[in-house]
Length: 100
Image (cartoon, rainbow, N blue to C red; front, side, top):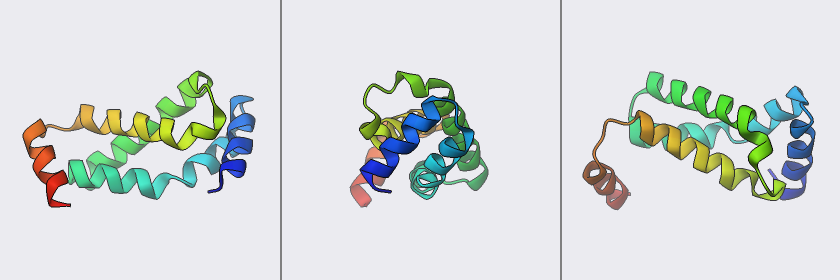
């Protein structure tokens, strides 16, 4: 998704346009899922984490200061959600990252 398109959708979503928000999230769904699966390693846990991320993004969208940084902000929301749900230790996560 291009930055201009993302910025436009974020502006609309901030005005409570649910279709714009859905399109915005759909554009990043696969990426959120991949990150979650790499850490959680369980489809059900990943689906729950992605759903929670989407809800958090919807509720906190107005805290995003610059619309063009939506992807970075959303990735941070997703990462925090995944790590919170993860029972893996920091050492295990570091080993996984080093193996990539």
